[in-house]
Image (cartoon, rainbow, N blue to C red; front, side):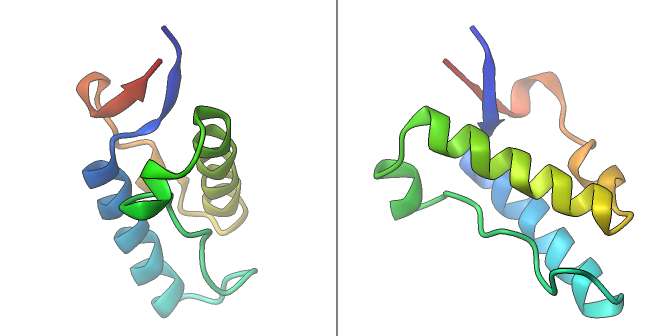
Length: 80
């Protein structure tokens, strides 16, 4: 089993926290990538989810808020 991305509810929480960071700081790009949750979850492959999560992690690193994406516990992940 490999970790693909956070489970949808956890991914949504992280995205909200990143949006809050973006609203209070100068970020490039202005907002983080959108998470593949809700319909995006149902209509995307695991590789798509994994790539999007990686993009979000890179955005967080670039904008000095990677602590937000690093707060996940072992049970917060979707694995396949």
